Length: 254
Image (cartoon, rainbow, N blue to C red):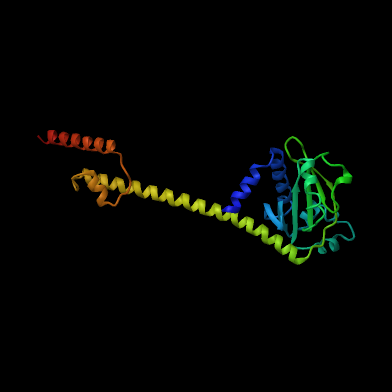
């Protein structure tokens, strides 16, 4: 729960362009076989990636990622079989030059995933400013959508332990998110069922009272273990209605 709150605060501090670029980058990866894709994933000490994901790409997905040549290429199958699986990726989203240069040495001199992407608005950085070994996604400055994959790089070889920790971080983020959703839905269903049961019990108590089983509505509610609080005004109106019904019955009988 604390981690979810921290993530919400982190998202709230991001600019609208940064949030739009993040959504577009998540979609870009998801459409190319990465699942799950999560945001705010811990990579290593003092480094939380904006986006991270893992996949075992099909041949089609590998082609969409620009990791595999066309099928007629003589090395097509060999290149595909040599791709590391599962394949990890991280994305750093930088909407301003200040944001990029603040993290340049701390983050962009490292490559903790097989595919490391830098997402930036188109034209934000010169080509010679792109960090070595990082794929570059350029985004539309107005709506944050992905314009193009501006630079393609080699798939990095990553130590198994490093990949395992990143996959673990993705799994924990997914667990925390879905765990919270599950319990919120369970609480909603329980509250809904409890409300229905209370209404049903209250209606039964009112019916027993109208049939003369109890002298007062309060007694009927108490005997039915109904914890629903009915306003005194409503009780008075029900008692008046009951008295009116009884008078009508007596007149009809007379």
